[in-house]
Length: 264
Image 1: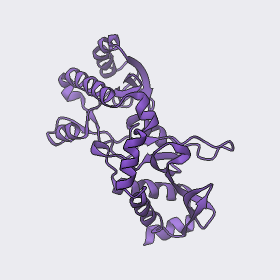
Image 2: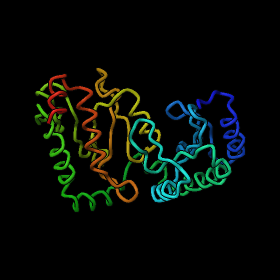
Image 3: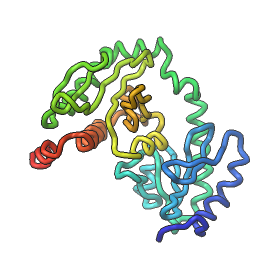
């Protein structure tokens, strides 16, 4: 069933969500075109406008437990699962209110552990120095990206604007590897992405994904940025990175190289 703006499911969502809007920091917004709730800018709950089902952000362990128990389903609007998010179907609507409360509580915990200002700047300089020493200044992440990127047909590597970049036939950028880009203290990967994908991923998991700032000429507009120095629940999934780079390849490579990839 496809839900309309006044569907009973969306009415149920907003009936449950309205009291939460009275809490400090909770606001109404949109995420990927879905109506949603934020806590100090952090998305934590939504209503799928296509189906009217509840969507909540918990943590990876809790989300997996609910899915394994058959109490929720994975949330994967673009075909890639968001690990901390679940969709709760209509038949389990009695669990919507406690899950909304739980999602808000977990959002508050994330805010208390990682203040907004600190997330934007990244780790402190002393912490980052220690981290970089243990990771050999990001060389381990670079080697993983290099191994993945060079496995695609027609891809070569060279410097571009002072960064390590992988090109398709030495002309079309496939991805950029950044280590401390303009002093941001982060290790990251920048890739072209299908339309709307960057917005979806950043909206759902801003601690893992970001939208690179476009250049004056518009380069990097619509690209996807992925942090490669994350840990814990946000630890890098290299199978996911390979899938992101493949999406980028299919986005910008000529048809003959895509055909070659499909026949390998």
